[in-house]
Amino acid sequence: DDEDDEDDEDISDDGSDEDLSEDEALEGEADDDDDEELDDDDFSDDDDDEDDEDDEDPMEGVMDKSPAKGADLFDDEDEDEDESEEDDEFAGLEDDDEDEDDDEDDDASESESESEELLPIEKKARKEDARLKKEKADAAAEQLETNIQEEDVYELEESDDDPDAPPNLEHVQARIQEVVRVLGDFKARREAGRSRGEYVERLTADLATYYGYNHFLIRYFLDTFSVAETMELLEANETQRPVTLRTNTLKCRRRELAASLINRGVNLDPIGKWSKVGLLVYDSRVPIGATPEYMAGHYMLQSASSFLPCMALAPQEGERVLDVAAAPGGKTTYLAALMRNTGMIFANEFQKKRLSSLVANLQRMGCTNASVCNYDGRALPKVLGHVDRVLLDAPCSGTGVIAKDSSVKVSKSEADIAKCAHLQKELLVAAIDCCDAGSKTGGYVVYSTCSITVEENEAVLDYVLRKRDVKLVNTGLEFGRNGFTSYRGKNFHPSVEKSRRFYPHVHNMDGFFVAKIKKLSNRTSAPGAEPKGDLPFGRDDDDDEDFAAGGSDSGEQDDGAAGDGYGVGQGVDDDVAPKPAKKKNARARMLAEAKAELEAERAKKAEKEKPAKASKKAAGDAPAPKKKKKKSA
Image (cartoon, rainbow, N blue to C red):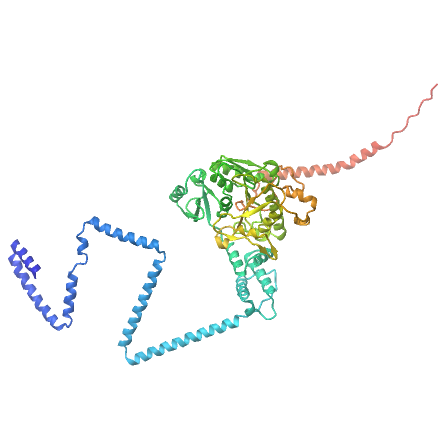
């Protein structure tokens, strides 16, 4: 009423008395109508209370403040929300659970209110519907349980009648799932009269057919891992590993490089807490291997697993370091960055064709402390002498990089793994002989492979522990599985457990193996007596000295001359897909055909001339008639 009086005073001041009288008349009529409606309405008091509450402005204190203070208020709320989200990453989940609980309570209250409003007959009908629904659900569950019990025993199928017919992959996949389920609980689900070996043989054949492996590798994986983990490994080998790159700290920082690549349309993130220089690339609008930053040597395209040997070696500034198998240069350039271009790195590569890529990467990345050499790694102790630290990323069978090189699925056999293991033992013995046990800061050798076979990893370490005065130490890597101390009845040295294994299905990187060795003395044999008969691959006693010194048993290139490679194995950063041979152009083909025709004509002409030459030779070989001698007077 006070507000109305003030309005009336304002209007009277303006001098509009006539308008005021008309407005009062209209308001009077409206008040009469409202009184009639209020008389009929039983909840008029409640409406008045609500109107009074509406008249109160909830933002009355806030809007009186200055705009700056209002903004500060929302900023404080935003900061509090951000801090709460950072403190508890599961806060959103809890809120969702609380919302669901509130919804359930609301539904329950609604159902109760509806049940109170329903008639008794309607309540009975709803109860009957709920009972029938529950009986139907129980019957379905019982039927499902009966089907599972009937299917618990799986009858093993025989091999296909026509081996030449194309396999039905859907049928093979279903059979694989059934066999895996049976092997998970073999006693309860096996068919009577069937052995576990029969199920494993069936599973081996089906996995080889479905994933495209030979039977040897599938059986090897089943002997090394459980059935479930073997399935995970095979599935992981069907997908490519993420693209990763390493920042060259000699030229830039990771933050600067990431900002530059993001501006070019590259979606990336740090590779993880375990690396301070790695970046994980999700997708890119530009070729990641042809950016100006790549050409300038700001980063190196490198698999995440190949970071690990360099991190385990941990070279110090000013040391002499040897990289036995350096090409294409990813690990060598990482070592140079860790050493800050100080000291000396001997980057050795035995394959001549890979030297060009090694030299090009060293120049692009700005490594000025590296010297490239081309020697057989087994002869390096005679050439270089002693160094502080040695990195040996040995050539291997490549069973850890099947996702990158699918030819490994069918090309590797037990004989190939034995050849690789033989070469790796020779190279590791030579690498240990190159290391100086008396080094003040070094005396370490890091051995790594991109293979997951035990013969190429733990068995090699167990051999050098018996042949040299060395011990295994912790790699310093924060993750990875421990090495095997026993495998299929063979027991290795307990310290082999300090090595680290990495798998595609566990760590989302190429399969890898890393071990760090500390050299205790420069003796060329292990302390203590060693039986002469304990020699690898059936060697004689006379051959053991040459093998331990790093020589080659074949007798080829024992002087350390350069060669075209060891003939077996590959590296994790190798270009595994060879380039197809270029087709000859038309001119080259015509020249080759003409040359072939000319050689054929010459051959025919030579054949025709052979009888004539033979006849002449026969005539020339006949004795000449003797001349009569004149009698002397």
